[in-house]
Image (cartoon, rainbow, N blue to C red; front, side):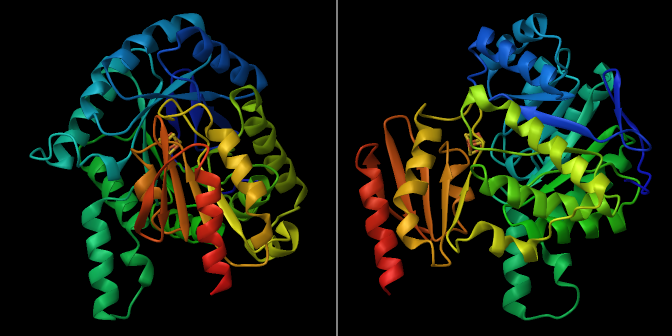
Length: 386
Ligand code: SF4
């Protein structure tokens, strides 16, 4: 399948890149501090075929829980660090890989440059033999890169529009920086919720950085079966071109169904091996709806346990608008929710006791969970009746 030879990187006893088979990954959606449930989920995912299982670590309590989790599961653990880069030193002993998000490095200790923070993460990773993933995500982009993109479009300058894409610019910048400090045990992901964008930016990144291993994924893919069609359309064309060394299919499903992410990933690899490639152009026929519901797969940060059920109820309640090209984004937490709903027509993100509703970039309000569906359908009706 792959004729593109990237650099091999070492993740514990595993390797990705080069001639290695493509590694399937998943992530725990349990609270990281719920040690037993998280360890059991990680074990179940590993037994289903996940070579790596990611766990979110946002604070010292999560980091302490990780130590226990690592003792209770044989799964290879990868840690997702969002804002607090200093947690890297607390998790590196137990994690085979650390994912950092270039777009979230600016919030904690803003007086320290991102380069200093990445240098520190890389030093810790090197000391512990840990790999890194530079995980760039369309919903949480580097604010400086977003400002440059705006300026680029306002200027109406010509040239390669891809150069102004924050996803690509950020991935290239961080790769170059890691190279410059001599850290090479890393891979990169460039994720968007739009399959065509995933293809375009990953193709360009692979062209410019042929040696760098790539982690593929469609972010906020949503619920199956739609999420599986969209993930296929994003990933199969790339894999057929030999782009991609590891992948995760993100699904909004309850924790006991998380192994479906691995099954979906395996089916994608089988399809590509058979030459059965789904493309973004074929999606409209399969989805049979112009309404697009994107939702996050949830993780330890999810703020209310009803999140998955809420996403399913929204899909049902919005069926009347199936013929309208409207995007509804449903996110699990306030950390990523506000940003990751920005490009949707309607966005909802969970808080502990209330859900927040946005139309475009404007907040409509925060509503109790029993009120949120009627409020959303009101707004959806206004859009479809216009
Ligand atoms: S939006 Fe929040 S809850 Fe959902 S996957 Fe992202 S960090 Fe986790």
